[in-house]
Length: 300
Image 1 (cartoon, helix red, strand yellow):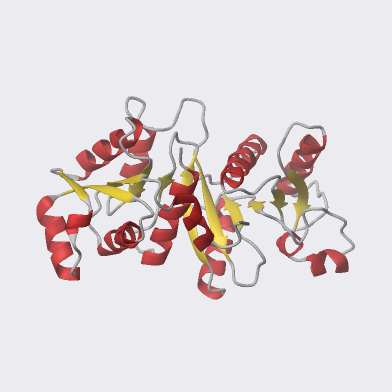
Image 2: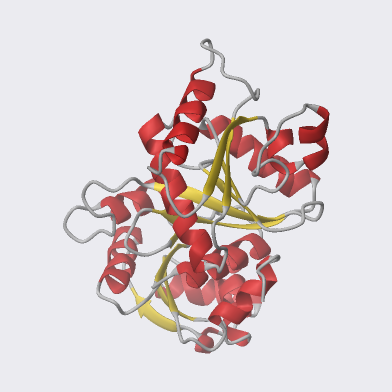
């Protein structure tokens, strides 16, 4: 079955027995997102949390803690270390941030002794979006980690996202390198990077996908825009993956889709040995749930 919506990912993970390791899982949204997946047999979860805090939160929101494995910790840092080690040691498939701080969570992933990021690997972010007005899922990178990716970073992001797409059953995904315009301008480094990456693809240096750029956002997702602008491209209007020029663009586009277009999405950190969910403490239950589903679907 072709994967066109986030709910289609259920078929890839249902009943597979995969487990989420949650760092300081003490907030209601995280617990309710986990409970939804557990009740539908999509995954199980082990939660590292402070006993009094978790029990009080569960009571306040009428959450049944018996559906989770719980391991008590004394503080945030202990929760992060133990949850990361659970993934590193193969006792869980996916790491998830609960109510701990993003900075400490990232330090845990990057820890050289017991963390999850191999030496020399790039830490990046991928957002998988189910957009009502688009004909298939759209993956985007990077709107959450790398401030201004270099050409080398963008190539690695493409390789990461292509690998994710393949794991979702999307063969030979189409990759659009996003810039403000569709022509090369010596005054706009992003267009120069995009042209270089497109040439690398044509020379066989980037494989298992179709790459084009520079492409403005309208060209990436609209065949009509490509026709009007007379742009002949296999990617235009049919992108599976979009690569942003900087974090501001990626963050703004992702939030615009979410809040103005009724888009549902899930985001994960890519580069570590296992997918890591980095949801904001303010994210909805739905966003956290689909972030877990995305992570589980591409996990080992």
